[in-house]
Image 1 (cartoon, rainbow, N blue to C red):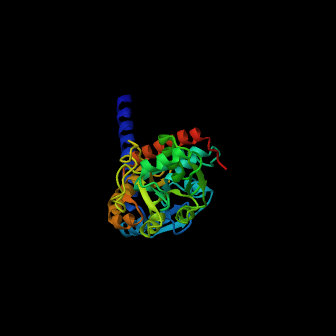
Image 2 (image 1 turned 180 degrees about the vertical axis):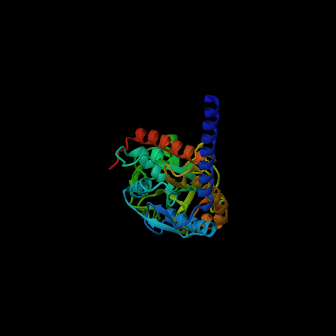
Image 3 (image 1 turned 90 degrees about the horizontal axis):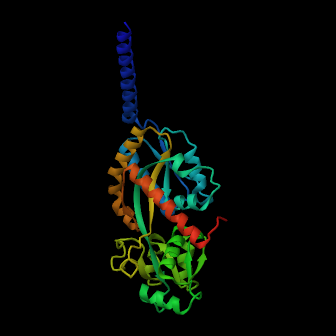
Length: 325
């Protein structure tokens, strides 16, 4: 009789397990049944916001529900990230996460969330290099010339970035550490301000996103010396990479992706990942105009990228003694 009871118990457990699997599978098939919100930690009009709206529009077309972009700027993306981390784990609140969000996790110890614990990566969406550009009056015609000039005038050349702790700032610090040059960092309030300052001659060198610098590059008010990615940028095909310019292995690019609150069912994450894998290539041309290249990933690959970015940022921040303001 005891043997019969054990058989019945195993059968019951099996039925429950199958029921749970069917429920999970059903949730993935029915998701979403209401509007999905994508949080953005920047004001409208910037690169991250533009990427979110491109992705949101295509996502909406493919899942049959409205996708609403919500801008929650402030605290270097911490406001939007915290809101996403504390949202219900149902897949209806997503976060357009940028490289700057990972940098903040390396820079600040008092964040109200843990990026690795509280958010579940879904997929990478795009990557894009920064451009090293100079005012046309600067005699440096290439990276080698810039290094030679900087070494001949230690501490006299200024380099602009969108702000302390920004991704271009860390790209610049990586450049300085690799070349052993003393160039003085000058932070501005944003990418637009930094490239305008360089074009006006206020700072002779700038590290900037392609989107913010492109018009001034086209107008010959800035001269591009190199891009910071491992491969050349499609918008600047004749501009070499820093790797090609004598810094082997140099690769520092901006990236953007989608995350969800930790605890979202894995089947919902998988559905989102599949849809993003389909729609991101469809916006290649729009991304290219922003100086970005479409690139998707598995959730695990995106999680590994975030981990590597935090680790790299921690090392850079410690090496320059950077403190959160």
